[in-house]
Every structure is written in structure tokens, then in C-alpha cells.
Image 1 (cartoon, rainbow over the protein chains, first blue to last red):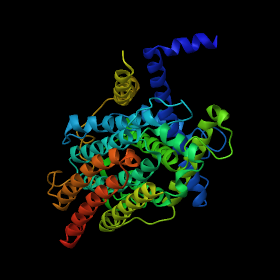
Image 2: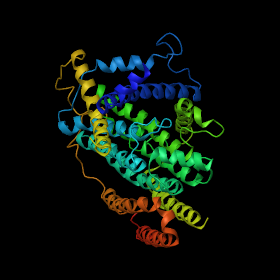
Image 3: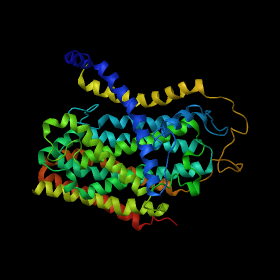
Image 4: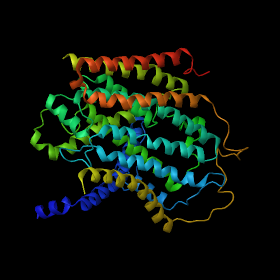
Length: 335
Length: 121
């Protein structure tokens, strides 16, 4: 029986269809799970109850109810808006999100496609969403949206640099760009790279938070100044896609950070032979730890000012990341 | 079909899935949702008050300068990554070369900072 299943999946087209189906269920599921976690945790941190009634207990069905509601909403496009661009923006944002899942290793061999340029691909594809955001801001024909879109573009390109440069430290240590290769390198040296790459990890998480445009880096949306930034004119289902992408990106960026710095699907003292089954659980555990920190930050820090944000990226994080590269490379060659 | 081509096809299929997800869900929802766009509904919302003038207003040129700076540093990453992989084989020679390269880049960044390009007034 098992042999027949493996036989069927050894066909390229069948396995491709299986992978696509898996991702197509994973993205909305993760979006809902993290969305609900954010609602409940935010409520906890503010001494509220949060969602309560939907589903009978703990309000667990709240986001399913929200989804059904969005399903019935009218698809409105403002008259003045640049309609084709306005409609294409959420598509581009979601393309970037879905493509990121491709290179996350969930266990030994459990990866959608182990590209040899894995991390490079991930960093490249993560900026596709930026274009979508800028398109959304521009096409809305709304002054606040335009401001939000420009702020988002300025912020995302500023923090793209530290994000990319922070990764180089891990790549030098592993000697490969393949995501599963990086995890294997950590297994063979016997410790997660964060032990020596703590500077890189700190820079990466800060930049990831900014890439996600979450508080304290949420100037592109900044409800109190820009209404809802580039999202202002969106409603119904198209609005939902932006949120789905945000939560799914939270997952993927945390997963990339976990893979590069925290050992990915591997944990010290867990027998290597059991990784095929425990691996996905270990990775998801690490991801939830990181996403929890992101939600925690949201209720801890106030929003930055636009110039402070740019100063932090260009004058602190980028020089720090370059220094990290130089030191890591020197140690690698000398030792 | 070679494994090389297959991996490219998978990348393409994943990108296409993103578009299919959005269009498919919107397509299914079109059966359920009402469609009655009136003049008032299709007005630009902005901040709730009727919008004045065009939505495409003039913006700060500062963003453009940041874009230029970004391009310079982005190209740098293309060179650093291949170097990072084979650093072990290159040894001291490769290390010194890259330190010179990074040094020049830092010089450029310092110049931009001293010139006040990154200052917001």
C-alpha cells in the first residue's frame, strides 16, 4: 500500500499537484491560526476577553465567521482608482507570500523544493510583495494611500538591506545557500548558529519586523495619521488578502529565521533518526515562539517616527551587519 | 524532464498558485456576493470626508534618493553571496579582497551620511 503511494508521488506532476494543494490549504490555515492567536494574545495583554461567542467556547470560530462574512461582501473598486492596478495589487502580494513557502525545510527531505540558492531565492521573492504594496498605494487615488504606499516602499527597501546582509553570516558559516543545507551544517557543528551569530539574528528579526510593517514599524498603515495607509480603499475580499498575506508572511519569515539561526527542524538532544516526525513540530514550535515575540512587541513599543526609522536602518543596522560579515569571515578564515 | 527544469517549473507553479488563489476565491465569492455599485459607494473614501482635488498629489523627492542608495547596496548583495559560499577555498586572499570591497561601500555610505542625504528636515 505505502509503496503504491510512493510510486504515485514519484511522478513529477502528481507530486507537484500534491504540493500545490498542501500550500493552498496551509496559507489560509496559518493565516487564521495566527490571526486568532493575535486577537487572543492582544486581548490577554490588555486585560480584555477578546473573541468570546463564536463557536461556543473561547470564540474559536471567530475567524471562520469573519471569513464567511468577507465572502459575502461586495467587491468595490473606487471610481477614480486605476482599476487594473488596483485589482492586481493583492494578487502580487499573495504571489510573494505563497512562493516563500517553497524553500522552508520542515524536516529532513520535507521541503517543497530544495533549491541550491534557497535563501537567496527567499530574500528575492520576499520583495515582490513590496511592489504589490506600492501598487495598492498608488492606484487607490487617495492621498493617504499614496503616502502610505511611499512610506511602505521607503521602509521596505531600507530594511531589505540589513535583512539580506544579516543572512550572509549564516551562509558563510554553513558554506551553502540551500535552506536544508544550512540546517544540516548546524547539525554537524552541533549548535544552532545563533550562539555565534546573535548579532545577525538580532538584525534579522528587527528587519523582519520592519518588512512585515508591524508595530513599532507600522508607519505605512499608521491608523492615527493615514487612516489605514495603502489599505484604505480596499474592502471585502481584496482587503482580506492583504491580511492573509501579512499573517502568512509572519509565519514564513519566522520560519526562515528559525532555519538560519535557531537550527530549523533540529533541536539539540533530539535523536536524529526521529527528526522526520518530530522535525515539523520542532520547527512550528520555534516559529510560534518567534511570532509570539512579534505580537508581544506590538503591545510593548510605541511607533517610530519616519526619520528615526530610516536612521536606524541606514546608520545602525547596515554598518552593524557589514561589521558582522567582516568579523564572521575573518574568524572563518583564521580558525 | 531534467531535475533542473522540474525545480524551475515548481517555482513557477507556486507563483501561479498565488494568483490562482486570489482569482479563484474571488470567483467563488462572486456567486454569493451582491453587486450593486452606486455612485456614492464608488466615491474615494479617503478619511470619510469628500475628497478634495486629485488623489495623486505631489510627494517628497527624498524617497527617490533612498531608492538610488538602495540599488547600490542591492547590487553588492549579488557579489557577497557567491563569495560567502566559497570563502573557505579562497582563504586569506578572498577575505582581504572582500574587506576592501566592503570598505569602499562603507566609504560610500559615510559620504552619503555626511552629505546629509539621509537627514529628514
